[in-house]
Image (cartoon, rainbow, N blue to C red; front, side, top):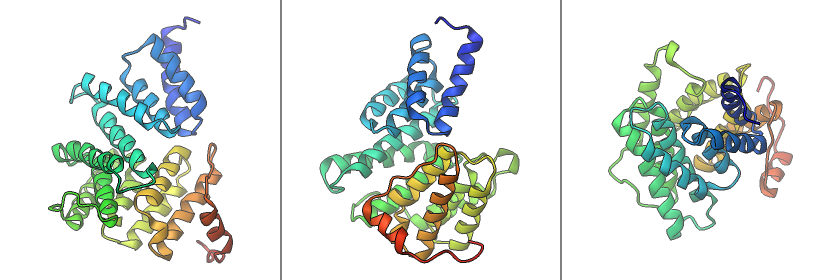
Amino acid sequence: GLGSDAEMGNAKALVEKLRNQRDYDLMGQLAEAISRRAPKAATNRRLYAQYLIDTGKATAAVDMLQALARRVSREHREYPEVTGLLGRAYKQVFFDAGDKAGPGARDAVNKAIATYAGPFRENPANTWHGVNYLALLTRARGLGLRVEKDVDLSALSRQLVATLDALPESRRDEWHLPTLAEASLGLREWDAIEANINRYVAAPDAKAFQIASTLRQFTEVWDLEAADGRGRALVDILRARLLELGGGALELDPAKLQRLRTQPEPAAGQ
């Protein structure tokens, strides 16, 4: 139907709620319906692109986000969200590639790094971009790719941790703890990482989309399952919490499933 302005407002808010519970089919349908009434609604278009990425359509999301980034001003509240999500789309293309050294994968990772680096260099308060910049540089170098050799990863990690620690409580959002944990990963400060992840997953308002995003980052980008026992324990904590939440689901390849079946029971209190 035509729908009133109030119904349109409610519908726009519902798109994000559907994303948070990872109900992507309904999210995409609703974002499309809103786009037909309000094609220039920047937040809805950005969330529509999120739907495309999370349903395996990253290159379509790139086209949508590039157009949106050109349309919104740098002062617009959606600009950092759009650029960050564009980096996420390029990042997904890279990690989906079977050959990480192939030209398509190398082009995608270089674009992802540049897309995250720009907003972070313009404003170090964009820690979401900064921690993804750190994570991608770390993983790319670990894969033998020669990327931004002049960047000191330890110094970048310390800068991010200091910025996040200095943020007043009133300005810390729901992404603060996982972002701080990721920044600490660059320094391998395991006690701080574990403390922040435990606080993060224990939050009563934790959302499936958030936990799944952190889990993907820890497994795909940081490759923590290949690190050591402490890295694998963090991944297992996130998986367990995800399964407790509405919209939580896991996709495991046979090797990961076999590891989970054979590993010992966690210690008491873990």
